[in-house]
Length: 274
Ligand SMILES: [Zn+2]
Image 1 (cartoon, rainbow, N blue to C red):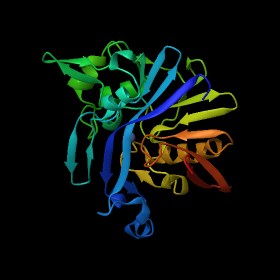
Image 2: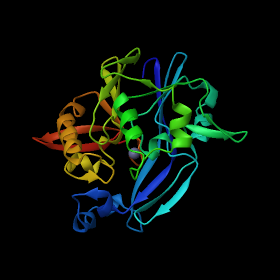
Image 3: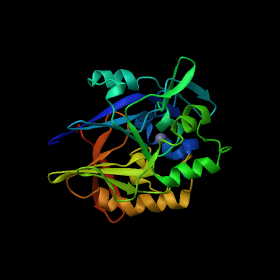
């Protein structure tokens, strides 16, 4: 778009048990949504980062899950492809100028640090790192939370380095911060305005386009379900405005799409490629 280039860089995939992952949905609901499920009946989501390029700026919004493979009763996941996909986009990790975290769940911070000479170092040595202060403070106070950040791999390398963004702040020309607290206490969205269009990087306000039709369904990691539902309901109207491209790293097939309003409180998502 214009002088801006936006690319989705997948890191891997996650699989969850749908009626467990989406609070408010039932097994009956999923029987009619087989197209959203794998052969094994799991719901799939992509995990990855958005690369925003403008002049000398090479910005990553979120950092995937990292080079890990996990299996838990409630789901499984694989990461590890982010740096390969960055290379395919023609960039080295030293080229990244800014890292912006939407929030600190494990599937968004995985590539914060790597090991070099037995030490954890920041993966993107020339980047400035940003989040909201709310997000940083919340996870500082909640080290025993089931989704708590890794102290050695995340918090320690970033301590004293992380910078805090304000709501409405313009990070580079036409790229704005939008606070959408709910999924976590400090969730950030980004909005890039170019010409008459905008790309809205909505992060984990929703985890599947099914939540546009079912805003009351809460993903199991929604920190404050009531607030997460409110955030969804309050933003869908704005998200469905003309010339708004939605970007979400968890969507499968295509990370980009449009939201169409079909009636009061009724929305339908369409993939960009359609
Ligand atoms: Zn996520």
